Image 1 (tube, one colour):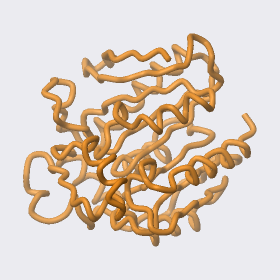
Image 2 (spheres, helix red, strand yellow; image 1 turned 90 degrees about the vertical axis):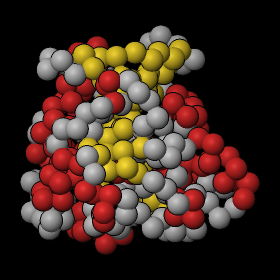
Image 3 (cartoon, helix red, strand yellow; image 1 turned 120 degrees about the vertical axis):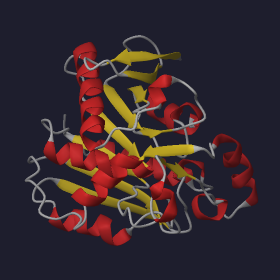
Image 4 (cartoon, helix red, strand yellow; image 1 turned 135 degrees about the horizontal axis):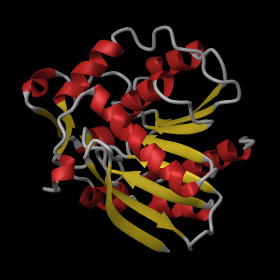
Length: 276
């Protein structure tokens, strides 16, 4: 397995750190654009990366400055921009991938708090992806961790309570807890922009292109996931197809759950229905 950790510098001068993985040079048929948590850094999510490599993906995982897995003191993680800056950073990194990889299909895998800004990007900015996956999406910014007094700080500090996002099984908790950073943060301005734009979520969505495939995966015991908002997104999507996969007892970090193989099976089912 080839692993690279480096930076991409946007035209605006923003340094975006990113990881990339591939089994061997040229040994892939898809590109996975992984937009992380910020609870579990992609570099520590070994199960997710290995699964994607087994399915012939090359994996790119950028550290978009507005939503970070903190603990790093690198300048690239200090962005306090709002929605416009987030969109510019995502767009620049996407262009970088597409220029490097040519016509290779790009499928975003979007985790947790990254789901809402990604959806804004998808429906409002550039020609859309033909497929993407939302994993444990946080679509309601009136819920923890981005509500309340923490919102008054320069960056919203994302603290976690183990009982909210981890498993009830002691063995699973021992596996996951060392991997999770307890000092992640989200740009305050980004949260303000998203709360304004999605006040009536999902509202009147632009028409999605015919043939778009969206897979949503979440645990039924995940208190950060708003089921009603996932269903609203499905009901108001004017075109394409949105499939929902849900799992009893599972919490937020579904790839480190006792029944995580079931998630893999359902991702395989989703991939089998793609036609590009």
